[in-house]
Image 1: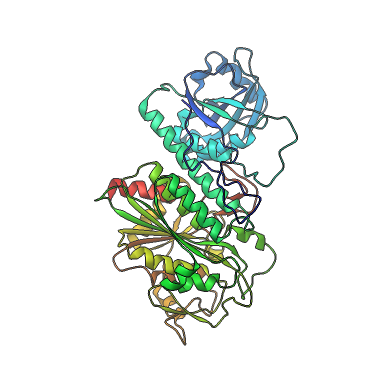
Image 2: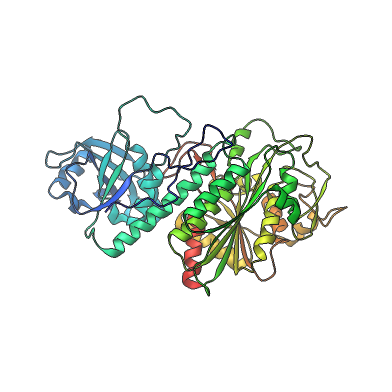
Length: 518
């Protein structure tokens, strides 16, 4: 059963003229197919090895029949132990209709979690070079996690690279061996997993597209195209509408760029009486820091400063794809933070949407300025819940490292979001907002300053700033993904170098939880 591509199948191929905005699919990932037996056309079999009582054991060995014993013996002979993420390849026994067997380790059977399975599948997908069609026995370890890991691990962003010169085939099809390929629930589980993985791919593509080709107007147009294809209602405010509407934060941050800002609203209606959720994502398409300019080293990674917006756009489209019984509206501010003769200066005062005045002490603390406008606008819809996400503070990485998002907000919802994030493998960690830090945001000339006069608790202070703009009674969570949204190191598990798509899987799981439990 091939799983069909969603209408927002990842791929935002750049145009020759970056002022144009066609949207076509990039090279898609592999098709995932449910099967009961090994296809004779397959090139290889992917198997999982776990350790039980200190000995390696094949996952789903019954799909290999009498060949299972020879496969295990051959893998052990080359050093396979089942250790987590260990990969080996051997010639297939003559009784199997494939050329080779690839194994990936899942670690101890007693320690296995869904995300370890997902990571192992991703590691395996990255190792399947030169193989076009694979059958795998991994599905019994967890169909959804395996499917997500295989699709996410197969992700490549090659839009700006010449085609490879070698003749090695790319991975185009993976057969997932299951006992009942026609079972409706099995099909539904696979379809959801593929939809989620493709949504993560959408976010990754947006993040990986360089700022020469993804600037506010282009980003807004791509969001419009994705939303319209998914049946969402779409609203885009240009710089004139933002000025007229009093969106001082978005306008102020965008003043220094020749490419003016935008605000995009994407809405999915899941039912008249369904709970309502507002999503807000930071969309700084490139961040120089403005007049408070950043150091040159590593500035190229600031192409990722719109990762929160990318995740929010992908999530609301995915909610429509899954037809969740939740009303979801994404409010997405987009701007480019540049230094120029028209840029806002340290010491300027702007007026956020809704009337709060802010003294801009540091123009590199711009994300909170555009988020504040969007949060106030989102709260005008009177949502039950509000989730905002952003690559907001370097302090997130100082506190939690590069893989663990910080989650702040109203206590109960913050803890709920963090727990769900940990369950799905994105690892969100609940953080406090100490009241004593709030006074440090007081300004001499305005209602608020955008930063404190010290470096302590930077992630927490940013949360306190955003809290000022969240309406009373709204259950709110802020997810800081400064490190987790963009991997500057080598690939691992199902995570590539570059855009990761975090926290799409957290947010869609939270929406599903709200749909089920309110």
